[in-house]
Image (cartoon, rainbow, N blue to C red; front, side, top):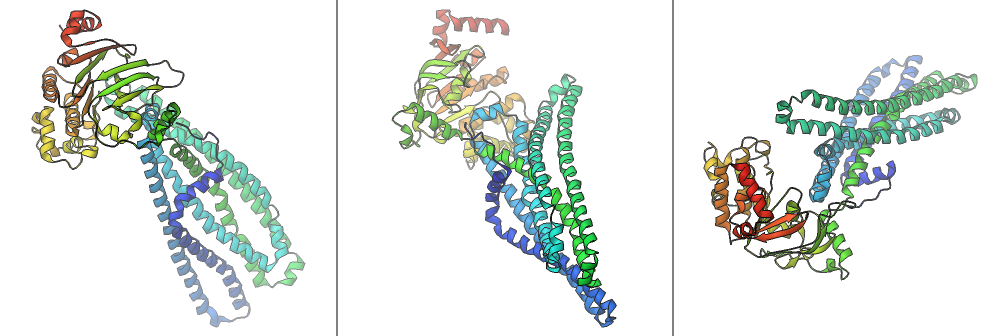
Length: 599
């Protein structure tokens, strides 16, 4: 899963973020026009003041209604233009955040299984929610301030230069100092903002762990421990936010002080006899008023750096995710490296396959530097055969199913499904031919029907759903609910027992009608009666599909055509239940030990 390790500059990140803004350029155009008109209305106040003073000096009181109308007009124009600009910016921001949030979620769906194994759920949740929301500051708040106050500042400076350019240039002499200060603060704010993203992930992770394991927390009186964990993560977040605030708000008063020095120098020179001799009192007041109006935009512009850097830091982390390789590209890269004939250029097989499975000299480890799980593993499973995998924890049973599903690339060797190499199949086609019943069955928000017909099975007829439920022996408890198949399950099926959740997962796998079914400890959560029901369902499915059954409870797999005993990544025994008992080897020892523990 490669990515560019070089850190982009804030400007590079912001330019990339602007790609998401580009489709909504018209929103920015409306905002620029709106803020430009609003800035012009502010400038009109300075002109209106000069006109008002002239009216008083010359006692031209017939102008009073004209002046009153001008005041109302300025307010109306400024109100309408500000609304148009603000609404346009909010529209752009909402669209950008939604688009980037969609792209991030889509990317997470297509990242390899190994990525999600290494990442905490809190971090992933923070990426999709908190990080994307921070972009609104960079795409709206900062830009809005930049346009609104920036255009006002430019207008006022233009007016000052028009009245007296020499005095106005004096006013700008300290501007390079402000530029250096902003640059320094930007680098520090970006670094602190990145830390804030991580601390928010920690807070979300602790919260998620506590909610998910609430029963364990209560059972083991872990409230104090969880509160301590949360407080540690929360206080770390507070510290980083305060560092951000200190840097941001310290830069702001320094910049404002510099502006104050500029203002003081401007007024001091403006009150000189030379300047006063060139302009009258009305124009002098208009000039000083315009200079005074510069304080507010200067203050606002000095504060946008912190908002901007929060958004840039969030965008940088999101773009790092978007730059990761998808699992399809990773598999193709590994294949291209191993296959000198470049099988990647061959057309991918997308048709259904039969249920035969072969592992040919498979070498695999979960990560570079870790020990090998398999070293030249060979398996051969015939189509329609029911094969059970047994062995101690860590023997490699679940890893076989992970490799079969294409969750991890091989170090070397080949896996064939239906006499076709996985290298010649796209992952979507491969997985469409395999129905998986995991050890811990995940159910989603929605009804029982929605969960059985999950994913590509949506739109399946009620008759097929009912038949699959009956085969999984789930129908008997589904019909006891008043709403039947329309019963809402809540998060992860909290309304169901462990055995009921597992039977729904089995019904989902049956409904898929794939040529291969993998059951990874699928009966581990079932009581004896439910297990017998599942055994009957497995018996009914024999011969209709290839079945790989991983089971700790050996009574589940007595009817298997073949049982493979794994130890340290090797098949040390295989045969039927009766054949392996007669050998009195590893399987017989496991079976005898389990009988003793059950008695």
